[in-house]
Length: 308
Image (cartoon, rainbow, N blue to C red; front, side, top):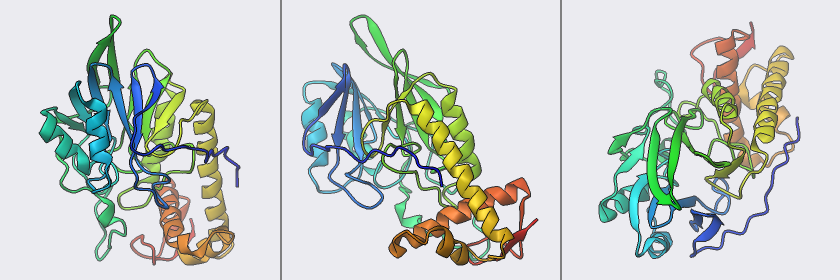
């Protein structure tokens, strides 16, 4: 497997707004976990008027109070979400309601494809199904914000489905920064798990990010990612190597996903093999899409797969 230069060093500094650059602050929610790292990053963009990106989970952990303290005396102009997982979007409704700011996002939570007959969505509980944006964003839309020293802040919506079907990144125009949500992070690869996630879309979205000039990513979890284009290319290669490993196992006679996981992830903690199986399934859906693999029935975690 390729070795990506992951960076686990990160100081969350819970309970305070941490300056990132002029007009950008980060607040990290104390919801650390196996999939959230040190917690969800909320970003404030602007000076006297601020756009709030990913307010985070609606939990009684002090994060909401920290956001309110950070924006006190300023106007919240927009509340924006990158995607509708419960660690990113639920608090957005409360913040929008209490500040009067519009709520922006790509759309409601939904699977990337229809569920097959009898299929259960293993990540169903992670979706924020109550999210409804006031303003629906499309790729290329520009959100105009505060004016600082004669320059108006503007975020360009970059449609990046894959982790979820409604995932958006946001490029800060005339700057090196892009808010990458969970699509690209410095500390780990993003989870792409069917039916909520889609590997074909994820790989296409990596290519889309490379079309934008921003090379410093501010992710939904963990620290900033410098030289982001180089990392994205490496991430793309890593995913393709994982795909090749799966195809090799199928050609070697492994027919089921548990068989493949047992070999490919033999050095991984067995408690993570469930998540690994979902990742393998996402790659198999991509291989089916390419016509390189066939299935004995409806594709699923329990189906059998063979070389085309």
